[in-house]
Image 1 (cartoon, helix red, strand yellow):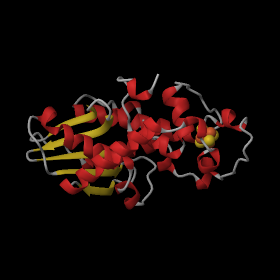
Image 2: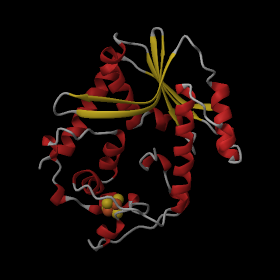
Image 3: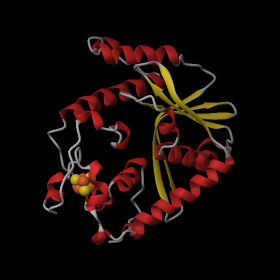
Length: 257
Ligand code: SF4
């Protein structure tokens, strides 16, 4: 079945990033539905566990339910990250907090989903907050990322149906809980909104029209080292490249949570 006809399939920043990094991997994961564990990436799993735990704690904190600090106090890194979060975001009763909020938008062909760490509704403005554990410092990279594009676009597109009114003042902030600092802060504009609409629509069209049988692995080799589908691809007999762990670009890897 054509992906276009799978009306239940919504594109996320993860799936679209996967397509950009390697269309073959996108096909395996999202069309053929193949799940493949890669047991060699222990370091990634460790970082992923930290990120997952932090997201869960932050969600409880903003929902106003107990976080049971004693249960993770011995995990110094995690505990410090939580203390940083609590200090940076004292709960303000005038604001509304929406942690781990999923927004879905569809016009039939363009179907997108954003899984947002936190939305804060403050009178006449909306803020998107994204927790970046193990973050890099390159703020431009975050600002220009597909994640920023999709989250801000979909929030603006759907703000009226969610909050009952349209918001023009929207910003997105990437926050490092370990360092207690904003890594990047992006303000949205009508111009950027129009640009995003065009680029997201074009990217989704590109996925629909991609000729899978003509996939050429050579153009995507830099993403192979930490890819769980290496075994499939090695049978294609194309010379692999070798990357050291230090070459790993955390932000080109799909989000852990
Ligand atoms: S191993 Fe490389 S070519 Fe194969 S799916 Fe992964 S990234 Fe793509």
